[in-house]
Image (cartoon, rainbow, N blue to C red; front, side):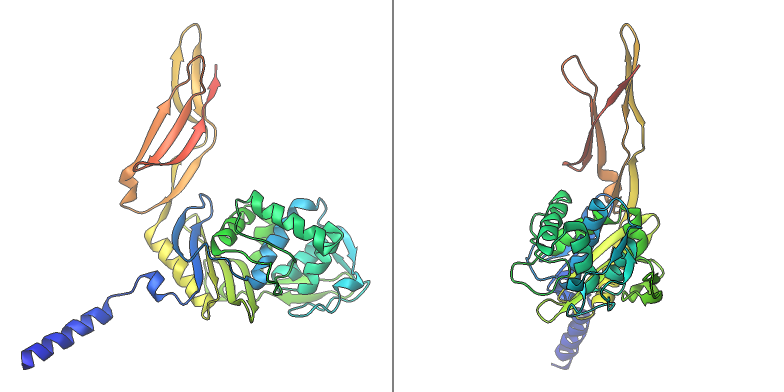
Length: 336
């Protein structure tokens, strides 16, 4: 009997020591881990659940401004409609002068709801018109599970997104050099009339050497939300956690998991020669675009390429497969 009890105790200890899967152990209501370049999903939990997203909304706001404003150094006089907005703020004052770029820093570093409204008025002339631009921006990123009605993320039943959509939008946003520079900045100076410093609320930028973005968020309805990014060994990962108490710790854990298990491999280099032929003249067939993809060590042996050279009626194509799944297809360019 004693041996049985000892055996059961040892078994219980072993079971407790086995790590849970991320889905089982994650405290986030919804979460995702995505590689930026390929937008491959490396891990997810309830990633398509539509939820309030608080100030992570401002990722879409910033990208919408960057897509629709040609001059970021344009000087803006603060409209009284942007003064005294509830929630987080950089305390804009009516008729103060800011550049659009300074307002973007106020938006993304200190999460200024007042900056969000002023940017909406500057770019869209009204919050309602700007929200339409936000939805267009999201859909152009391949995010179809979202609806935005304001630029700051204060709660509205018709304002929502998903972890998957936020990861897609962020992956596109990080390809913009200005956006990328803003979200990794720890401090910035704003206001032309009364210059002062503002500081980034993203604690990972101080605590983790690989962190380089992106945006915090909180409302009572949404809980603590965070979209984080980090770069290591030339691979940039995006982690989204929604309604998650330990949002910084969880995001870092997710991205560390990604770095430990995947590496970004260049499968097709730029201007790769895929073949040639000679009839009356020599023709070369080139894939102009490069292709990189995050792979585990095991997956590297499962990559295969199919080259279809053109005939008189068709374009040549390069296809790349991971196992049986097509992950890249590109028309070939013919050079003489």
